[in-house]
Image: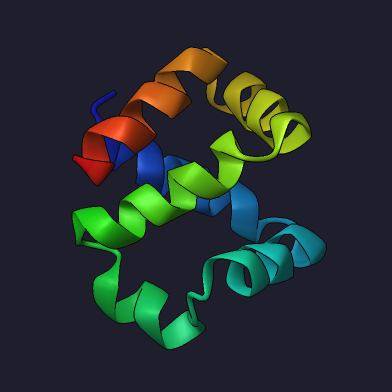
Length: 82
């Protein structure tokens, strides 16, 4: 799974929980509008993955749900930020 695919999958996982989705918006400054219009950009995808990388419980749970390692999520976050 490449970084972009991982960001899409991670966003889907995040949005399955309303509290987690609200925390994403609150901590990243993203809005539903920005997510809809900007999800194809590396900047927004990177913000989604960085959100996970900065909160270990979510990072671990998402990695397990997506059957990837936490390190893959962190690496994809860095790749998209570059």
